Structure formats: structure tokens, C-alpha cells
Length: 125
Image 1 (spheres, rainbow, N blue to C red):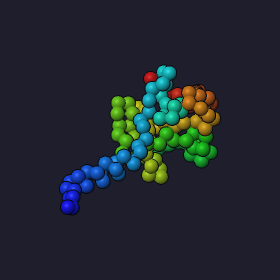
Image 2: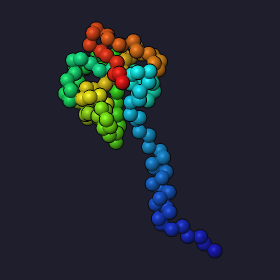
Image 3: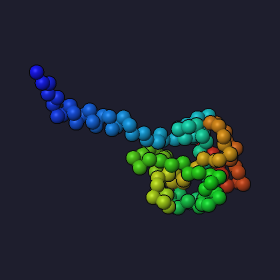
């Protein structure tokens, strides 16, 4: 006797298995009075960026201060928004200002970039 599997069950199983393999970046989270990325790395704003404008951090700056990237499917929530980068990617922004991590922060909770050159600041709650 042959067993038939309804097509709806096959379609649902395929959808579930594809969804289970998709990983999305988590939105920033509050930790110890400041915001971090999903790995616990401190997030910063750059005074030379303007709200809703392009990033003022490029070249060597972008190597030292990597953008806090978001997935295309991430959505704005509260003070957090997702803005486009020059290369078509997505970056998190807090109150309209792009956010970054700092390459010299080597472990979760480090905040070595706080007030760096008086233009980099942790994103605080």
C-alpha cells in the first residue's frame, strides 16, 4: 500500500526548513546602561555624521569603526532605524545617527572608544 503525503504538508515542511536556516541580525540590545550588538560589543555614534545623512566615516576610519550592519529584513523599532550604506547594505541607526563598533573593543562590554577624540560616543539608554 502506498502512502500519500498531501501537497500542503510538503509545502509547509519545505517552508519551515528554509525558514529555520535563515539567520537574521539581532537588533541592538541594552546592557549596563548602553547599547550593544548581538555579540555584546558596544555601539557608538560619530559626531561628524548627520541624522539621516551618509556616513562621514570611510577608509581607515571605517576599518577602525566598522558599521553596525543590519539585515535587509530588519525593521525600525522605537529610536532604532535601518539606513542604507553607500554599497547598498543596511546599517543600524539610533535616533537617525548611524552606529558603529570599535575595532579596539576586543571583548563584550569593552568601551575603549567612549569619547575617542571627543567625537565618538557610546549609545546610551
